[in-house]
Length: 413
Image (tube, rainbow, N blue to C red; front, side, top):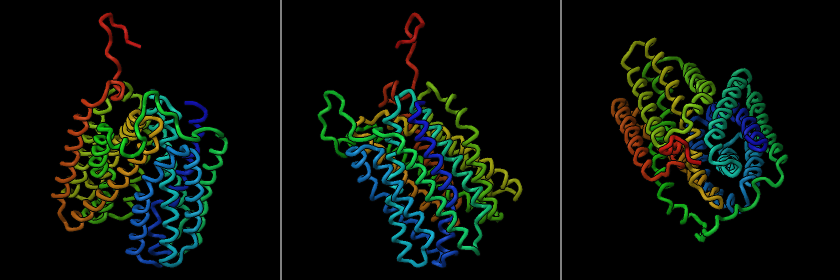
């Protein structure tokens, strides 16, 4: 990787530590520490997601118009301000106002960062770079979570204030790292010779391969990450009647499995079909959910062991998805539309992050465990079929396959 890419990844790792300090605690902080109530806190968190979804198409346009680095830098400043203001929230109107600032800043960070890495890397580098980005993200979140656990106290609002101010500082540090890259990722990217498209979202949505990839992501992520954040806590605390502390342990198993496995899987997938690997991800996540479902039928000790194993299995699928999906998307994207393409991917994440928890919450909350499991497994199977069908729309280069050897056994250039 070039020194420029390494700096971007370093800055992202810094901000991930800040996110790990505060991300799991927002509902507890607003609902219990600030006395707004869990229901209101949940609505505020959902409001952040809605505002982010509305902002994403605008962010994509701004990235293609002004370049990914300026948009990312503005987003970091806005998010730093919003996170710092969370420390002084004490009523419902202020909570929604600050949540709006946080949502605007957050929507202007992830997709511009992906577009910046896409612009700074070649096709051969992207898969590895996005995989390492995901590993560092999880490492940072894991470190932040551990630090937060040693500092925060529900009966001490000042301890939360410290966390949110430190989180804000990590965004400022990332901003400072980007200041060391003058002229990088600035301005619109040049069009390829002979490209006379209108350059807007209409052109983006005419790319059938992108649409298929987005629909695949919507199904797979709804049955993956979207279900994970609801199903794991429910199966631990409600269905298996275990202590809530085991939820944190399950998430830690997941996070540190990613950190331990990511570099290995990056070597393993080199030169292999991305579409077939995405079908494999669907299979792995389906197996993970099968383990979770079976846990409800076993004694407590065995159930806990199966759930921990399921989070580990799920993490292996994550280490495959993280490098494959964004690298394929950025390989599909023309340089002058890279911002919009990455915003579409972020939109998929946002929508699936609403569908998955809603479906899992409704079914598991009503006690329909069997129907939930059948729905999730069916979604994983559908995603596997969609991935295999996508293969026929991709060139060997886009699919990540090594070229076929010539008759004399040599590899083509």
